[in-house]
Length: 330
Image (cartoon, rainbow, N blue to C red; front, top):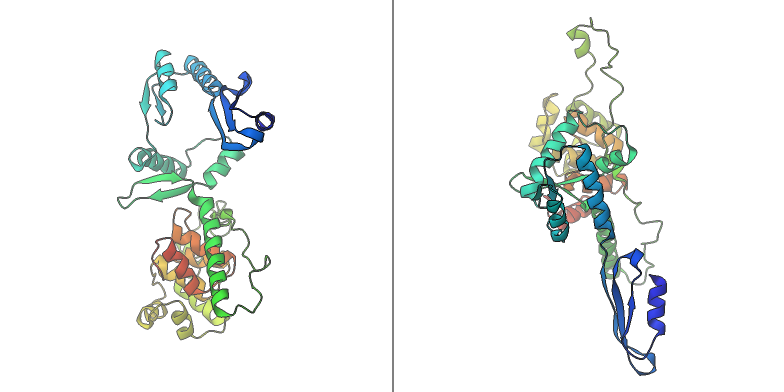
């Protein structure tokens, strides 16, 4: 294609049209040039590749000879010709949109089968990678669908923070050198760090079957209240410093201190992970003690995890990003 474009530019002084080779598809590229070879209008391409469609149709036809295919779902976008071809081959095809209406039922079923460990993929590394990077979006009615936003949201957060920092630097003291050196920028966020791993310790599968309930109960780990209070003490903080920094009121914190089994909502736990300046692993442990986990289908969780991994604990800045993404602030 580069050679074709080069040949196109080297021709003048009329409208130049070059046929695309058959092995690249069917179509033409053209460009209008004037006297002395100056370009009047940018080059344009009319390119309609049908070789892939033929391959797909042939592949489906071969599958139809091996299996009883009840129906084939298709996205309406530019699918008219293939739909007609498949129908002509005797297949039943049905339209399948990319919105919540069509995507929610199968996505929920996939989640159910996955949680029940009923998905057989033979340990395929690519399929595992794809599943690990799924981002699930939910509408107000509770419908869900897979989304491609997972990776882009981290880049957007970084760009948003950099832009805000640049604006503040200009407002505060123009004379000072910008503090936004490459070393100062946060590292790229790795979504795999949010992946919940199986706990190897605790209730092991090798546990003797005759061990009684009392012995199991004796293995209970710290409750959320116990873990939180211990972490506050380890950091040399007072109770008031901790709950004030977490934007938690005194009466609410009093419930946590007085009741060893008290479990607050997830938002409160996330607030304490920031107030206590926890690492991402420490935050996961604190969340787990309250029965929660970081979810990659939650923008709030993704944003908080981003800041924890980059060791940024400025609640004001975190709230600023949460608000920019339409999420409730702390």
